[in-house]
Image 1 (cartoon, rainbow, N blue to C red):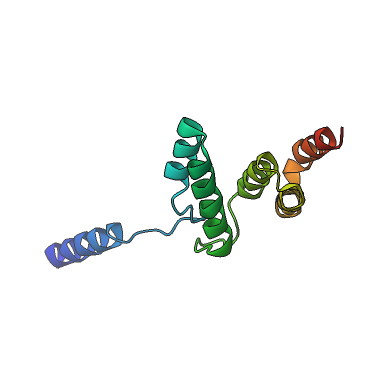
Image 2 (image 1 turned 90 degrees about the vertical axis):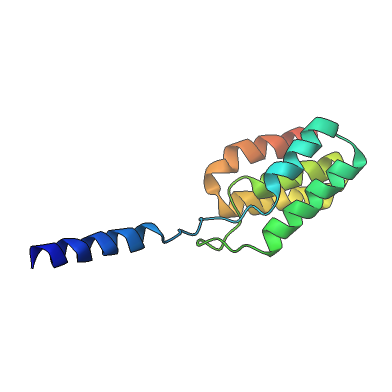
Length: 115
């Protein structure tokens, strides 16, 4: 009786350890794209980073179902750097709406743009 109970518990522990957990956010290929952008800072790496941000925003498969913190802000900042000002400001506004704790920082960026 004890042996079978121990075996059953061991099997259950083994099976539960094999279960994978889903992440809160999906990041697509963010690490590689941002690394290439920081390393090269050329037009190609900038375009790849912008495309990656669009994938993250449009295809969010994490358990929360929302864009990860900072993505809208970073995407907006990159858009501002490539002179897509209106789109960049819209992304910064979305960051403030989704993550209100970033409001002070984002407002400073927007204020600097107006000067």
